[in-house]
Length: 637
Image 1 (cartoon, rainbow, N blue to C red):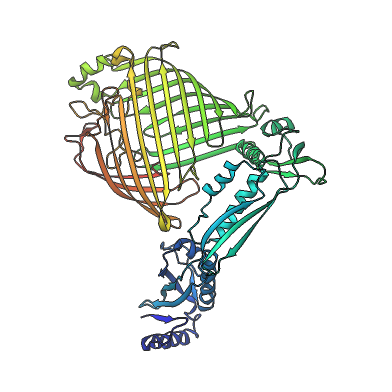
Image 2: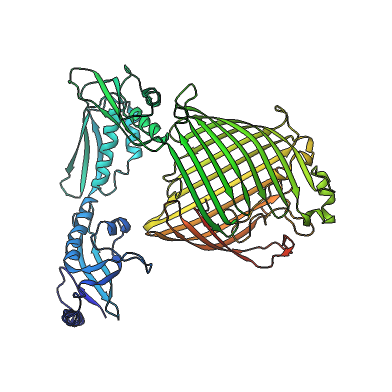
């Protein structure tokens, strides 16, 4: 059963008239009990567009007042209304006109009523017509801005010669040009965008004209709204000083820095009124302080760590100076312990901070358990908005105990001795004195659920040699992630990891069990359990290795709060250092479901081993099953 009506159609079809009559009869029958189905009881199941190829249909759908109902039984429902759909037809034409298609027409709107007469599927047929294309883009009055900066405006803009004239892109380019002037000392600058059609009416020249106004410098800084946090703490996070040339980017960076302190619920930096002939621009920093003591407690469950609990206490502005002190406790079947942290956000310079961490942490694997106790101090420098580098020094005590299964495995005796473990007690103890250098660069749009951008993390470590240490080794690791939005809400996510640890003097005992690499599980090669992809003893116990290589690739699709993924994972761990073997990788593929929550996506994945590990035994149990289910919170990467 379907109902159709259209615009600019020469002939109405007989079966459409029949369906209109049937729908009218259904409405009359419903008048005695409920509202007419056409006006509030018929939910919208889907909206599709036919003939729409030049625009993003997801954005087009978002511009409509008629909305699709959720696929979830408990999700929100939207109901069909004819008057709303009539208005949406006009919205579609305006949407196309804004994007350079003034001749676009809606030629048909087809409404299919399901057999139960309680839901409709809507298909809108569109004739896009010929677009108005951009013939030229020019900038007038921008001589005060370096020429290469003007070129950057065009490179950053989606407005290009030969492309359809999109008014949203014209506005975005105008904003880029205006911000460039305001970042070169002209806070009162104005930029106009003019469009000149050619004789054919099918192409347009776009001209951006600048009115820079008077050159200005930063003046006095006022602080307002603060109570427990002193003016001095706020002023030192402001990246500009009186007398410096006005730059809008410095105002934005100052606002970001103040927000990043987590002390304030609200931060705003305003320019105060001034006379045009006065070159100094006074600013006011207005803040609203949040709660300085915060407690978080959570419980959860995952297929790997089973039941878990987490508790955290943070004291912001600890002893003044915007310091943050905290304690974090965790308990699960995989790890448990307590960590104390202290952050000094200002160390001689606003871009330099100091972190100290003390911990006692237990880690459990099928082959061993370890206890690491000690302190790490890290100095971090913020190079720019996206880039950080840090230098760390740590002193930690390690105590590892081999499991009874490993201790009773005669094939492991030589390996245990080589690793510096007592083959009788199965214990390994020693001290780490480690220097670390780390670089982190990220352009992702969201820390919990990125949809665009990339993230690169690289780390070098040297244990021993410089600092007193029982163990001596060097290690290097890199982790690269990339997120690319595709059509209609799809996101392509990729990750590659590589790491190697090299013992001093090629002595295996210089790399303790606690530093070995493992793969498998919810965040690496799904299809295997945690630790299952690594060098194995002859009895099948994972004992870890010194070289790691792994990759993951996902196609993600969201349907509101619900989403799905298709993934392929691969990788391996090798016993020797720097022993990468691309031809020797384990692979898994699978599907997953995501449900968005405030703390990240709730995740359920099913992975299937494409080339399983023969005779795999974990914790004394044969692992013949080629698939695994993984349940957790947060994206896999």
